[in-house]
Amino acid sequence: MMKTLVKLAILMIVFNVSAQMKVEKVEPQIQEKKIEEQVLKRKVAIARFSNETQYAKGLFYDKENDPLGKQTVDILSTKLAASDKFILLERQDLDKIISEIDYAENENYQKVGADYLIIGSITEFGRKNVGKLKVFSRSKTQTVQAGVSIRLVDVSTGQIIYSEEAKGEAETANKTVMGFGERTDYDATLSDKAISAAISQLVENIINNCMDRPWKSYILSNDENGIIISGGKSQGLKVGDVYDVVQKGKSVKNPQTGMMIELAGKTVGKIRIDLLEGDNPQNEFAMVSFIEGNMDPQNLNNYYIKEIK
Image 1 (cartoon, rainbow, N blue to C red):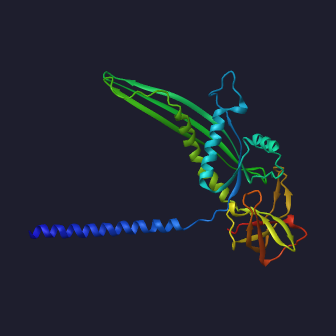
Image 2: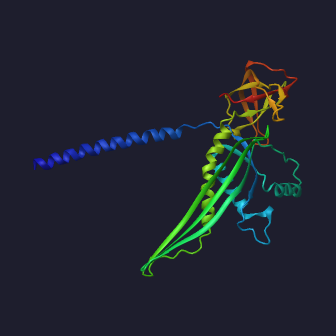
Image 3: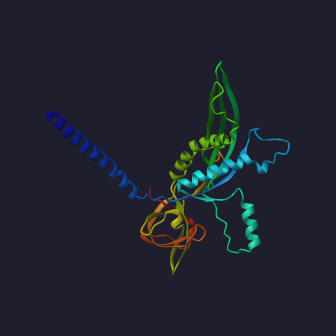
C-alpha cells in the first residue's frame, strides 16, 4: 500500500512540473504575438518573367502569352504579398487595366512608379519518370525539376542590386505488390510545386535586399498649410514617427562605368509625422513638422526623407 502511495505522489509531482514547463513555454509565444513590427513598405513591380526553356513551345507557341511564365509571376506575386512587406504594382496585365480605365472614363487614375523591379526567367524545366520492376512488385516515380533566375533592379539608378538562380524539385511515387496498390497517373500539379519550391528559395533574399536599403520618401509641398510628404498607412507610417531629412549629394559621372553616381547626402534635420491622410497608396500623404534643423523651402527637390537606421 505504501509503495502505491509513493508512486502516486511521484506521478503527481512529475505532472505538476511538466504542466508548469508547458505554461512557461506558451506564455512567451502569446507575448510575442502582441508585438507588432513596423515595416516601411517598398513599392515593387514584376516587370517581366519569361520562359527561356523549350518546354511547351509548340508550333502555335505565343511568347506574349506563355502559361509557364504567367504561372511563375502569379506564384511570386502571391509569396511577396504574403510577406506583407511590399506594395505590389501590376505590370504584367497593365494594358488590360488601362483599357478598363479608358472604358470607364476614369480620370482619377494615377501612374505610380516602383522603387524596385523584378526581372526573371525560367531557365530550366524538365519532367522524368523512373520505374522499377521486380518479380512481385512495381514502382514508379514522377519528378519535375525547375530552375528560376531573377534580377532585382533599383529603379532610381537602374543598378542590379541582387541576382540569383534557384532550383526546385517535386516528385510523387507509387508502388504495387502482386498487382495491389495505387497507380499514379500523370500529375500536372508537380509543375506548380517545383516552380514554387524554386521561388521560395529566392523570396527571402528579395525581401532582405529590399528591406536592407533605407526607405525613402519625398517632399510634395511646403506652404502655410504645412509640410506634406508622400507615403501613408499602407507603407507603414505612423503618427509620431521620426525620420531624417537629407539634402541630396552632388551627382558625378564615373568615367569607368559611364554611370552617374549620387554622392552621400547630408542630414539637415528631423521631421515628425503629425497626420496621415488618404486611403490607398495613390492618394496617401503625411503632414509633418520639423523637430530639428530646417531646409530651403524654395528647393524641395534637393531633399528627401529617409528612414533612421
